[in-house]
Amino acid sequence: MVASLTGPSPGSVGGCGQEPPTADAAQFCTDRRFWECRRENVFGRISDEEFSACVEPIERECAGATWSSGCRPTQQAADTCISLLRDPEFGPIPTDELKAMRGECTLCGE
Image (cartoon, rainbow, N blue to C red; front, side):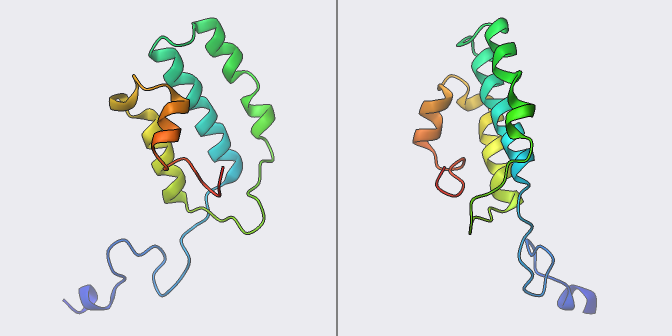
């Protein structure tokens, strides 16, 4: 029982006032761009050939991506965006419309 009283609270990442981890900008860029292309393909808004062309430049364009000065989105925020893009419930909504409707993928004013 003592351990339950002295441990970090639920949802506390790192505990004791530590900041939650910042999302990796290059990984977020790669994941977001892939799922933007994939959902458009799965729901028939782009062909398989267009999907291939969409994903082809991702690795090159996202390599070395960084957050803008003062921007430190959490890994949880990045994961929330990717989950939104992967959610089949929202699949019928084109990606641009979905991102305009919902703020989960607006990290650092993007």
